[in-house]
Length: 313
Ligand SMILES: [Zn+2]
Image 1: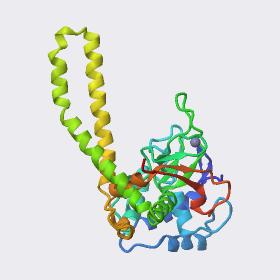
Image 2: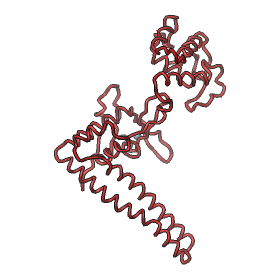
Image 3: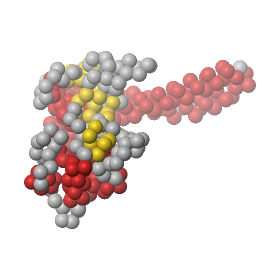
Image 4: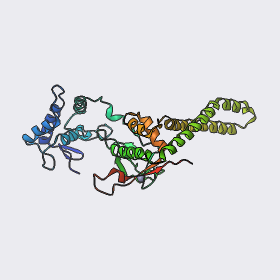
């Protein structure tokens, strides 16, 4: 990986000439009214002799990416000061002002990047290599959202090797799910699955309503039970209730999808709320396996997924 511009090495050590143009670029990019484009500022840096660590010309996006790096302000990825880092190109306040200014210029609310609602987490997508579920995560705060197989821990020997851009993965899965609906006979099958989910949801609702009575009955026999036995029974009742509520939320997402006409569903998808989109995925899919990239970029994202379709019993 190339050296971070402005510093002699990964742990700091200011390169004065580079720090000078980076600071001036940051202050130009921090002006909201009138705003300058990233490319205009990069062009100005280039004309004044500023070069990338590899000796190349700056582009707007690479300049902005460099200035957004937490180490520009001597911070680690969590935003905490790195001990013994020495003089920094920007102060944390200068960097924050820069990021907020660019966010404002793009016309986005500033928390937008923080709150990506992942479509395929919570057990839908897993790693094809190690079969552990994928998690939603960004490489760093300014990166695009992605799915990744988490690095292994003692209790969870996942492989940690799979990673895929969230936009690419979710678009590919949505395309396959919507295409699948149009296969002959599939729509009827999905309707059947949805009806089954509806019936199970009704049964579960009754079961959940009955929880209070079950707790009361348990308390009624408390005096006749050993304390440990009572505790165990109480815990089992609580666990059962929690599992029932979780299952009901899952079923409600499936039930809420308007499946009447498969062609309507395709149009519905684009404006549907995230929870409802997840419902359609859940009614038609049991698992999305994400495969390794096999090297190289720009591969067809459909070649990186293998879907287990849900079928009616
Ligand atoms: Zn894995």
